[in-house]
Amino acid sequence: AARAADRARARGGERPLLGIPVTVKESYDIAGLPTTWGMPEHRDHVPAEDAVQVARLRAAGAVVLGKTNVPLGLQDVQSFNEVYGTTNNPWNQGRTPGGSSGGSAAALACGFGALSIGSDIAGSLRTPAHFCGVYAHKPTLGLAASRGMVPPTVPALPVDGDLAVVGPMARSARDLGLLLDVMAGPDPLTLGVAYGVTLPPARHDRLRDFRVLVLDEHPLLPTGDAVRAGVERVAEALADGGARVERQSALLPDLAEAALVYMQLLASGSTVHFPVEAYEEVRSRAAGLGADDLSLDAARLRGMVLSHRDWLAANHLREVHRQGWRRLFAEFDAVVCPVSPTPAFPHDHYPDPLRRRLDIDGVAYPYFDQLVWAGVATMPGLPATVVPAGRSPEALPVGVQLIGPMHEDRTPLKLAELLEQRIGGFRAAPRLSRLAAS
Image 1 (cartoon, rainbow, N blue to C red):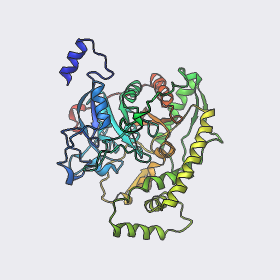
Image 2: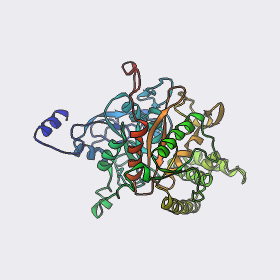
Image 3: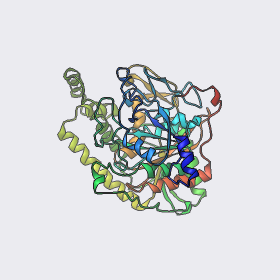
Image 4: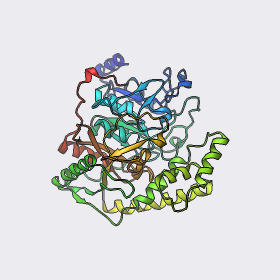
């Protein structure tokens, strides 16, 4: 493929990614390569057809180097499984690169390709970018077709899952936009029959014209000092560049309510394939919750057994929040906030993730509570771009996310480019020759 790209370039070929080396998250189907989702029982599953996004990469001239590691079933904030082993963070091999697109982020940080494609439902693009010091963009819900990013043996149907998106990862903000242009567009089997995509331009081209709301506190989970410092670095760069920076707004939708709705919607599909006995056990546990238990753990447990009636009620609340975000983005162009409350944490392979704990400045919290910041953009379906924002005292990368208005993906992407010019961007992880990243 590389030699063919060289020949095409010599003839004056000008496809968007002609000759660019890329990696692909293991969960995408690539004809002739295994798609396992980290499941040992599917280690020999080899699809016969490329996922729609892999086909778009090839059509754009990209050279696919190979696939990158994921957690078991894509259901972790780390990337390890019995098929391919553990992916380490390039900055500290005792820590995770994140998940579920952790292999892609580690590959980019190590220089294995200039671009990668991943997916995101609970920060799976954004958290690995934050942990590894690279860039990622979670597109507006439904902007990029996802057919062919399916578990092994599941038919590659043109179905978009609730909350989930596919999107680009890169080592520069501008390259994110380049790859998004290749990925964007409906599935040619469904909406693509009648519709194309024309994204509006960024709202502004100069930093001083942006109106930005900066958040560093969530009502349900503290933000660690290292991440708070990263948000502050971005806020200072924005203010120094002349942007209008605000720290609070009455227009901001209720983040606590949003997190509970998000956790319910996120968990609502997790028990679809449970055996009847396992499902009934979960339902019994959920029934035993007190009415006054409004914890994130309780929201997840209730979400696992939502009735269709209750799902519709949660979905209605999502629409209420979307309307709130529309009002906010009439006054602001972007929201800056954390991706996760901490930098990359140490590997934790305890078999039951519900019993794992996340250390935030010396205090332990339920492991999956760290998803609240990812849910700020995911629940309403907003676009969000992750940019590197310096290092923690332990020399670990810290990133922040720039959330933009729905279907205005070019606005946070442009803001990311402008910030890259002011605070610097990607730099390669040290000691690459000694790494064993997947």
